[in-house]
Image (tube, rainbow, N blue to C red):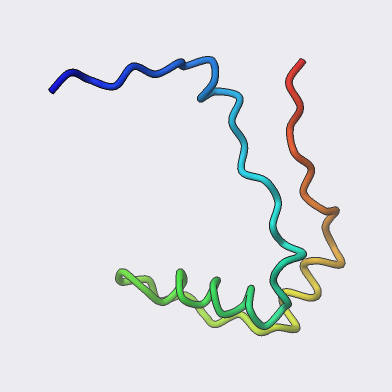
Length: 67
């Protein structure tokens, strides 16, 4: 089977669109806690209040635009 060609310029400019507004604080905490407690990870749990505080302390994600 032949390799699938790729355009490295396209891959270098691809960004993940922000999706934060689609999840409430409890849902974000649930996702974060899954990552922090799976695959051998043993990080402390994150509460919905922690997510709310982080949202207040940071600006919304902005998609990177190409020059």
